[in-house]
Image 1 (cartoon, rainbow, N blue to C red):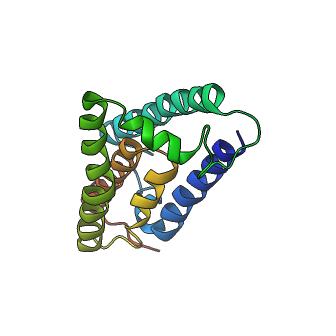
Image 2 (image 1 turned 60 degrees about the horizontal axis):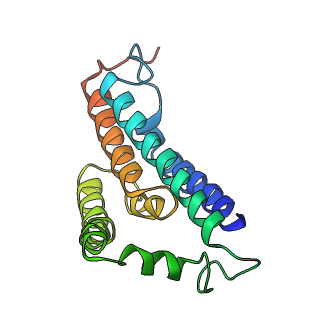
Length: 161
C-alpha cells in the first residue's frame, strides 16, 4: 500500500506543478465562471478514471502482494507482475499494447507538441501525471486546460485602474 500512497502523493505533486507552471491559464477569468461545463465534464471523466483505476489497483495490491515485497521488481504485487498480467491472453494483450502505445508514445507527443504551440509551460508534465494518475486523467486534464485557455482567450479584456 505504500507504493499506492506514493503514487497518490506524486500524482498530486505533478498536477500542482502543472497548475503552478501555468498560473495565467488556471487563474480565474474576470467575470467568468470558475469552470465551464465542458471543463467540468473533462474533470469528471478524468476523476472517474482515477477512481476506477484506484479501485482496481488497490484490489491488485491486496490480492497479489504477499508480505513485504519490492514494489518494482518483486515476484508478487510488483510493477513487473502487473505488466506481465496485462499480457496474459490475446484479448488482454491487444488492449494493453493499444493502451501502452497511446500512453507512452501518443500522449507525450501530442501534449508536448500541442502544448508548446499553445504557449503552455512544461507540457511534458501531462505525460508524467499519467504515470501516477491514469492515461484518461492526463488526457482529460490536458483537454480541460485547452478549454480553459480557449475560454480565457475569449473573455473580454479587463482594464487595470
